[in-house]
Length: 108
Length: 118
Image (cartoon, rainbow over all chains, first blue to last red; front, side, top):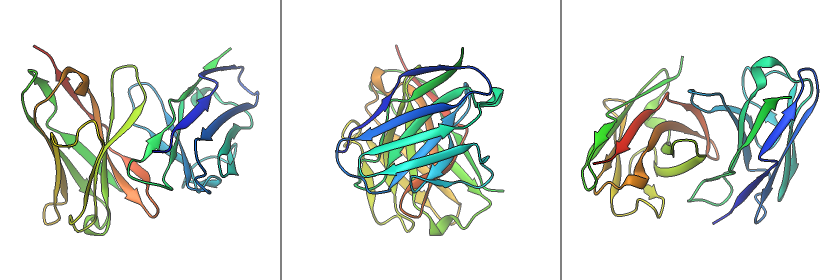
């Protein structure tokens, strides 16, 4: 099983600032990495797949980079609606499909 | 618009059973694999089960293998999760999701809450 580890657990950022979230895989997953956003009381929403491809309707301030075992989600200029929990997920070797434990982006 | 709507959650005693349903609309359901993912209160996401487009292959997390059964009815555009021998640790919101291409999940339903408690 591929273990996904996200850091930090919580990120305190002011609106307008850049947020950088990390995700590490225990073994290479190539570019088979997705990012999801989850707001309180809501279902997760796909942001990024293929490590760097924005899903339909996702603003350009969200960008994903990385391959192999190290990945980054960057929010270039944080908006109020971006405060949420973000999860990475690998889909290279499955089952199981595995998620990171999440990074909560909160307002500083 | 692609939509997934889960139902069937509720309160059940330990050892009991429950069947979740996920009704799909807005896409060619028979052409896509489907997945169930759960989220315990205050916790992260855990993949639970999956089924291929035709229903011929199923997948289960070790934590539910032998207790849960996934199935689908392509004539009704619905995927099911039969949950038996439920335990307190199965308490969670259960989401269904459509599997895309190499298996990212998009979209997700709104979820249904399962509470296992006496």
